[in-house]
Length: 342
Image 1 (cartoon, rainbow, N blue to C red):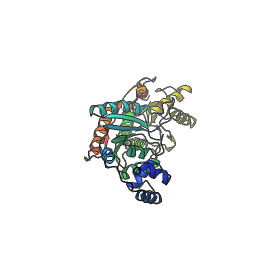
Image 2 (cartoon, rainbow, N blue to C red):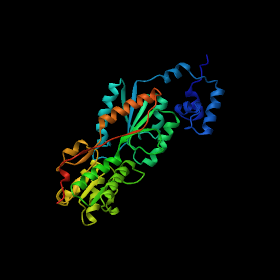
Image 3 (cartoon, helix red, strand yellow):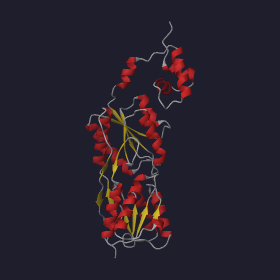
Image 4 (cartoon, rainbow, N blue to C red):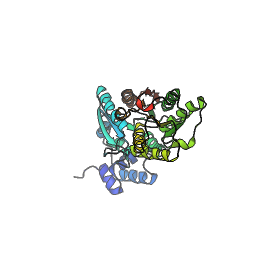
């Protein structure tokens, strides 16, 4: 007795994956026109009928949210930015509080991560943390939107951005930190961190930093903006470059605490005393910030509030309720690494 054709039969004859067949039959823009027509022609030839029960099952909620982390360079094997580790715990609790399980994975372990969860029905929606190069990342977000995946992300909040994002008010954070440093009597500054469209969160912190300097009628030295990603090694290299340039500024304001930790190591290696010879500030308030010697002055991101907003907003999008992007204020945390200038 001849059995009914399945999507696996179509996939075999078309020479594509089963998930590609599923997308092609839904006219997904992720499948090119030639492949889509080939799959649809085979489906007609084999008299393939979509299993309505399976289709209905796919439309039901799984009761699971997926948290996808972007791999970051770290000094250990975790490949997770320490800031996101604190977010992970808070998001897990927020999901549980709302009756959802949490599936945690890395984004780029699959080249097709932006489609995996849509086709496999592993989760009702995605929370994205981290992105690497933001310019490259935008294309992935557009594909998620095109296939009507429910997702929210924590990060940059840009004009014309794709999807819903929540993140720190980085401009105000950079501004507030710099105002605090100026009030202590500091007059010359370095900024260690990227400052362009590839790293928009750092760029906003730098813009706020520069705005405070301008309002105080102080000079901005463009040579003292040194690119760094959020890692100890990158912070160490940036501080070494700053040292090599000659006269030290009053303050090194780092775009993240990880950069600041690396910079502190570089200064101490060269017997440059912090804060006596150069003050040091970070951003994020990760756990290590109060364990360094001296303890690190930084801007604190409210990870608990962020986690609650991310989870609750994602659940609203899953239920087709309106959600809009927003910014969360940062809080100045004053410690010993930024004493008053002499």
